[in-house]
Image 1: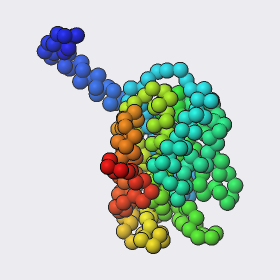
Image 2 (image 1 turned 180 degrees about the vertical axis):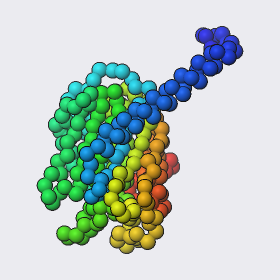
Image 3 (image 1 turned 60 degrees about the horizontal axis):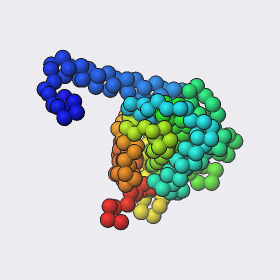
Image 4 (image 1 turned 90 degrees about the vertical axis):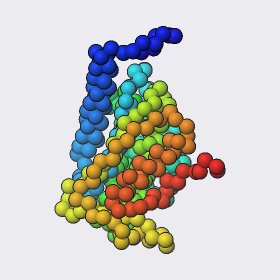
Length: 268
């Protein structure tokens, strides 16, 4: 242990106490993610179409003043710009389908309600929240998106673009919220909820730009992907985490590469 300029060996009880504190921190973080994920998954029509759910919780929440409505709006504006930096507009961004300019007060959070409410747009339904402790949560329908004209994919079929855009939006929201609340390290979890009878299939694009399922691995259950990131690190390093999280998600369905999230090289 260091005390100013003095250093001394830790006693066994001190070592035990430090490890106990570390394990408790880890347990509380897991419980917080479980609660956020369960809360954001509730009420989704997962028997009809697959939903992606992403949540993030600061490892050690920095207790500051709660964000005002104007503060939450600023976070959402910042997140929208970041998300379009991480993934372009070729995919459907959940942030584009929620009421960003008028977040509503919820239980210790600001809630952005879905704006895709009519029959023609309901396929891109999305919800998100910025919690007063710096946590964020997002849910978006990713199964059953339009195929061509009036035809839609099955509820179990998910285009990889939709996953990439959801991950980009979640990570942008984490980054922007961390900046506004003074947090840094976040634990994250991204999962796909589907309770229908057919196995999940993640679709990619062939070299001609057409939807392709020839390399897809049918999934009877999507295993949630977890990670820890420092939301205050350098832009390029954080961009790399956005890419890696999205790649972990699509890899699970047999897809090797992401298409929309392309971090620049350090040389460029």
